[in-house]
Length: 248
Image 1 (tube, one colour):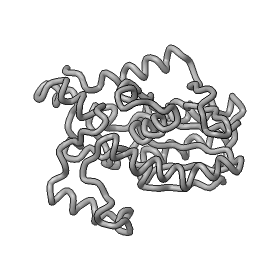
Image 2: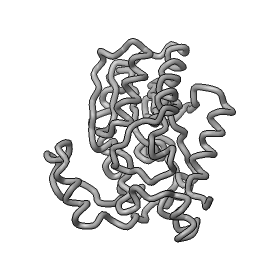
Image 3: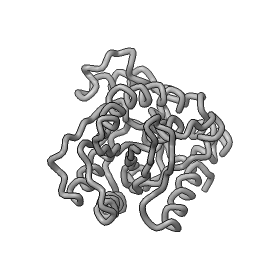
Image 4: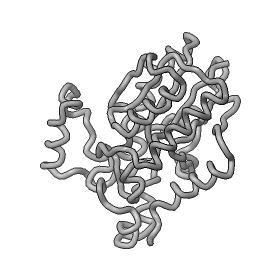
């Protein structure tokens, strides 16, 4: 049996403000710091240890894994960062308030932008797209690979191949792996692990700062999945994520 732990970063400053964040590199809120520390504490209390950690290029995920590994006293393990684990790119929606956008365009349209499988948001304008390509962390990425706005389908197209080529071999070699990433990059893996339909994944909401454990057989078929932590608190966090796109 294989086991893998997924953790969505703690609440970010823009999560707190209910803004579309995407690739905007915002930090953790005070609540998010506490969530990250709590995630580390619950992993430690349950006897988890890791050999390698994967995360994105975005500091809200990077800071979360740092707090987790610090709680586990495993700051020394390799941490591998990849832009392919970044959040879904929300294009021109980035920085907009989700509730205000729902009031302007309707909750159904915002729900399509947030949870549809293959509908992209409005893309970045030319100036914003050029600014993205000039950021130092992305200058070695081929120009046509960087997204200017993504659907979940697009996100899956970069996350799953990365998992299969880079992360899965580590698991098969019996390494204990933790992935600290984002709501949609993790939803991509949830869809992949559970073989969910395009419609089924729309109902999946991943709470911040809460370890999600998958137990898999040797064919990577899910045997069991569960969150670590208080069930009521996890359910409340999932509900909060689901409600982000509703009008004030």
